[in-house]
Amino acid sequence: MENKRVQIFDTTLRDGEQVPGCKLNTKEKVIIAKKLEDLGVDVIEAGFPISSPGDYQSVQEICKSVSKTVVCALSRAVEKDIKIAGEALKYANNPRIHTGIGTSNYHILYKFNSTKEKIIERAILSVKYAKKFVEDVEFYAEDAGRTENCFLAKVCESVIKYGATVINIPDTTGYCLPEEYGEKIRFLKENVKGIHKVTLSTHCHNDLGLATANSLFGIMNGAQQVECTINGIGERAGNTSLEEIVMIIKQNSHLNMFTNINTKLISSTSRLVSECTGMNIQANKAIVGVNAFSHSSGIHQDGVIKKRETYESINPEDIGINNSSIILTARSGRAALNYRYKKLGFFLNKNSLNLVYSIFLKHADKKKEITDKELKIILEKANLNNKMLYISDRRNCNHKKINVM
Ligand code: KIV
Ligand code: ZN
Image 1: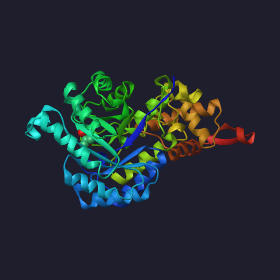
Image 2: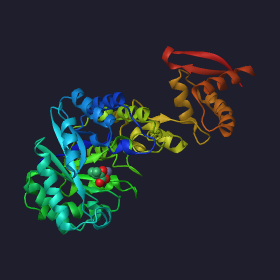
Image 3: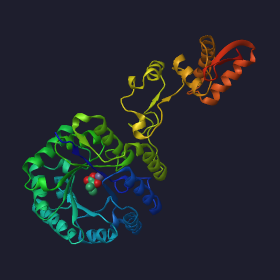
Image 4: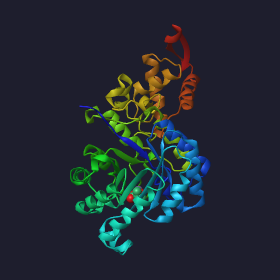
């Protein structure tokens, strides 16, 4: 069976940037866009040009700065939006307009005070108009997660007829369960005429913490593109996180899927986005949180030191991190302490280690974490009491005599 290529549509600079407190200027957006191109994303959603002159300018500058990657601009199903998006994209080598309209009853009745027929009409008109500016037109059915599948299929079929190249099925409110979202994608695959000519895309929000799971079920049921953001930033609880979906695909070869992402750049891209946006990454965030490859309990540390795979299923080198971290706390054991001293160039024999460990524990009980600097202080402290013990320095094949407590 041939492996399926999953396209990665990054919307860090559009959906990601929409969150309160996250504001990027044009220069920062261009830096991030270049990094995303190096990372290997297939599409960069650069912004929503009608929303502000600054966003228009950012989209234009990004178009000039990236070469191979598709650059996408968002619009509503409104002529003026689409026209401005088309103009903002004029320097792009591979431009895409992303236009669409709400299709759930909530949107049709309360947002638009409209009818299903009129929504389909507007959807068709927007795609037809967008085709005047670019060949590549992606259509989103906003709130598809809460749209009845039969009506959703009708909308998709109509816009495909008028030239949509990509169909995006957003779970805008993070409403669906994974199986439900997967079934929706499968239903569209099986019931929409022309669906095999277009790329079917997932766009999941994380209101129930299911964005990544829903995207996964989407691609397992026939979607070929995942819309996601670095560090999972985005409206409310965020979007599917790029690093999670990419690493799930990489770690699970039985899925028979692959992406174009150079995973070794994931960690540096994550840090760049966090620094530019000022959005901190939660410590226990999968893949990119500071604790994702840190071990602090003695049992885990002992296992990881013996063989990394005992407590890690992902190799940190795959995302561009050199080492797993062994964090020294009062829960750490001798193995971890010895490991960290070795890293500092101190090779303790058994007696020395036992002695230093007892001093370490007294310090660690008072502190959250013991640093390298404090480890050296512990050794120095041990020196003061003038008892003689041996530390074997294996690198120099000799024994250094030092004074320890
Ligand atoms: O969540 C959503 O529905 C969106 C669309 C505008 C694509 O972000
Ligand atoms: Zn969204």
